[in-house]
Image (cartoon, rainbow, N blue to C red; front, top):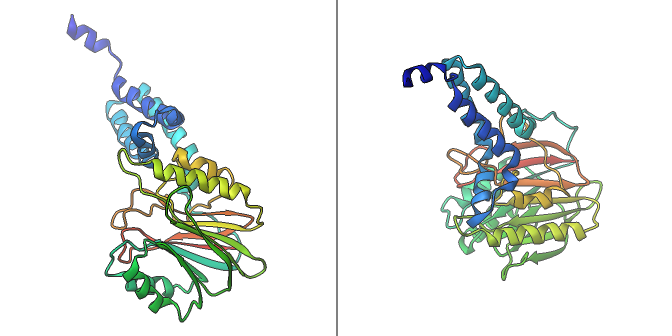
Length: 305
């Protein structure tokens, strides 16, 4: 009797159900309860659901299962709708007026000078750095100050610029210490208000500080009526993270110029994009993730106009 029932069971049922479950997660991950920051971690690595679907697609092919194949195709369509635009290389959008690089150089990094030198060799107009400590700040200033005569460092965040800076201030973003700054930069054509940020890290059970900073940053940007705004740095949040949504509703981020999803962390084998350049009133002409250079993050470079 059991053998007969087994023969009548459609092939690939479990594979198909698994694919539909992945598709449902992609569609409705916003309904997951964020207990202990678990939903944030799931949303950070959500693009990797595509790998699971490739494996399930291979299983459906091996099983020659129509049901599984259709389920995988449906789930892949959902994945493509979510991440396809970001996966494809972005078209160049004109000639940038100025370029900016940003990188978390990693606290207590003995290679801080080499990281700064590597970024300066790209000859950007602005360099934003995060996780500066007392030693690396002095080292980095020695590397960058000659070529970048205008700079502002507040807490562990710094901005070096070829252009004059005005009205710089530190931002605590709801915390008791400053991990962000805002400053007006005399960029070519028009002044740009730059927010250089390093948001708190997310670990199991430790996510409230990051979420507080993101919410306060979104409120700050919403209240800012400056025409040209750039918010750049280490957000410790991927684009799919629900905590980043209020900010992304007011600012935009261009896809990377290379094929891929532009992951920046960890540097040795990036699995998530935690570093962003978000703009309002500016066009991102080009965007690139930089090669590993001695930090635990990869830097990003954007050309803006």
